[in-house]
Image 1 (cartoon, rainbow, N blue to C red):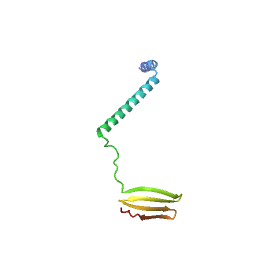
Image 2 (cartoon, one colour):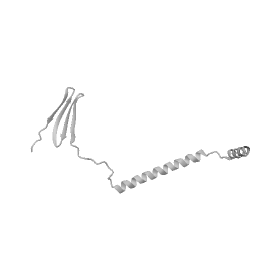
Image 3 (cartoon, rainbow, N blue to C red):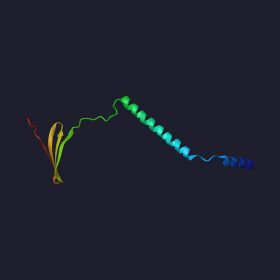
Image 4 (tube, rainbow, N blue to C red):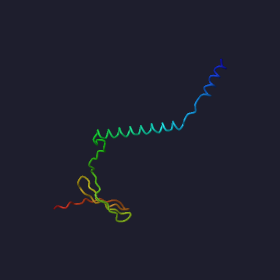
Length: 106
């Protein structure tokens, strides 16, 4: 019985075809290309259907930097706006100071 089983296994090993790696590689590349195309198409369709609703919502910031001016490598002047009030901020190696800027009345 074992002898017959050994003959069957040896016959199967001899008749097995070596895998064609080139064909498998080409099939794999084609499959990856198709999957990428489907993914990009689905994203394009979703973008068209959503009408731009996937964009990041930009909320109005409470703090806006109007201008920055470097006087020396260690000293800078900043004009910032916080809740519609402008401030002059001086940043130096000794510390930071903040002064409100009066609005000009026309």
